[in-house]
Image (cartoon, rainbow, N blue to C red; front, side, top):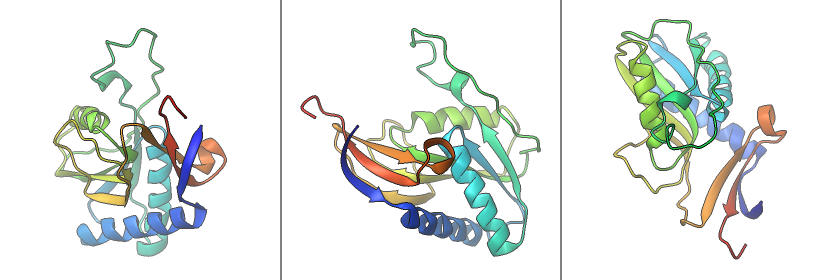
Length: 182
């Protein structure tokens, strides 16, 4: 991994989660109808952190679910190896709810499109709002995030790597050089 820059450190990540949580509460005029759905894997952990922050700020324990979109991806059939499928864990009715879909990085929009398909198979929500920790640009589909932790414009030779304690042992966001010269 050829690190170009550390974009967000541990304290910055805490502040970003707090700000995103306040924005979600404000846009929805409270938490009375929202549910949180984190996309596996890092979106799940970010959703858990926002869930805890909502309890701290608003005193409410909103529903929290986890969505696996492996079988909904448009590149699913093009992969040569067998995909690693995890489970979706949404134990509440999404119908008539305002879903806040949470992921770590928004890039082409294809993962978000797959998540929308998966959510619509579960019911008919009132709305779906999209929250991402990082928006790095390069959209291929007309998808945008409603809540963005940080916009990090990248070149085609760069990648954004989110590291979270739950899966990676540290909290940080890095800009990585993936060019052949690196």
